[in-house]
Length: 404
Image (cartoon, rainbow, N blue to C red; front, side, top):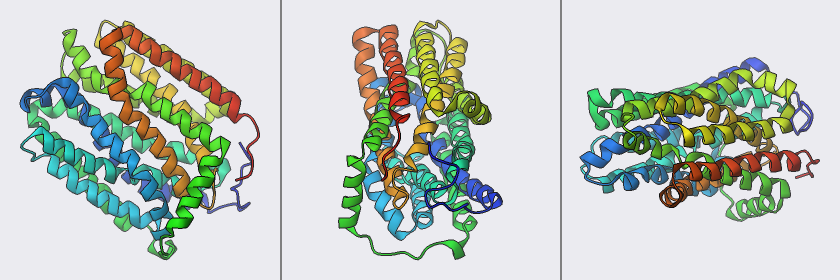
C-alpha cells in the first residue's frame, strides 16, 4: 500500500467533510444491502406460497446479483461522465420502484423480473459510493473511512435478513418486500437532499471510446487482474451457501425463516466486528497478513457450518465468516480505489462486476456441489478455496504496484 496521501499528493478535504459524505453515502449503502439479503430467509415461504421448489426460489439471489454485476460496465463510465451523485440518486429511485412492485406480484415469474430490476438499480449504490470515497478521502484515511461506510452496508444486511425472518409471520413476505421499498425511498431522499450541489462537477458527454479504452487499460493491469479474480472467486466460495441456509435448517428440523434470518444475521455481526477492529487489525497484522488470517477464519467457519447440528452453532460460525470475509473484501476494495485515480468509478465498477458475477454463479455451483457431494464436502471445498485466495492475494499484493 502506498503512502498516506492520495495519488495526487493532496492532503484532501477536512475530516469533517468526510464524515458528512460517509453519512450520506451510508443511506445509499444501507438501502441496497437491506434489499439484497431480505429474500434469502423467505425461500421456504415463497416456495410454498408461489407453488415452486426451494432450489428455484433460491435463484432469486442470482436474479438480484447477476443484473447487479452486468450493469457495472455501463454505470462506471456513466458515473464518471454524468456525476456519481446524480447517478446514485437515479439508481435509488429505480430501486424504490422495483422493490415496491415486489410486494404486489401475482406469481414467481414477475417476482424474478422485479428482483432483476432491483439488482440492476442497486448496482449503482455501493460501487459509486466507494468511488466517491476514493475521490475525496486521502489514501491514508481511506480504509477506515470505507470501513465506516461498510457499517451501514453491514447493518443493512443484518437488519434485512433478520427483519425478514422475524416479521414474516406477522406481515407476510409481501409486507417484507414493501418494507424494503420504504427503506429504499428513505435512502433516495437522503442522497437527493444530502449532497452539496455546489460541489458536484458539471455533467459531460459519455465518451464510449474512452470508456472502452479505460476498461482495456484496467484489464491489462496485472494488479487489477488479481483483484478482480480474487473477488470473483470470493463471491463463489462465500455466498453460495447463504440462500441454502433456510432449506438446510428446515431439512434438519431446526426451524424456518426466523432461525435462518438469525443465522444469516451472524454474517453481518461479523462484519460489524471487523469495522470496530479494523484500526487494531491494521496495526497488529498489517494489510497482507490480514488477508491470510481472514482467509483462514473464513475456512474454519465454513467447516464448522458443514459439521454443525444446530442453528446457534451455525450462527456463531457465520459471525466468524463475516469477520473473515470483510478482512479480505475491505482490503481488496481499498486497493481497487488506487488502480486508476482518474477513473475510479470505472475501476470500482469492474471490481463489482467480477464480485457479483461470482455471487450470481455461486448459488448454482453450490447447489450442484451440495446435491452431488453432500453438505460437509461442499463446504470443505469452499473453505479450501477461500483460504487459498487469502494466501495468494497476500503474496501477490505485497509486491510493489506498477504505475497505472
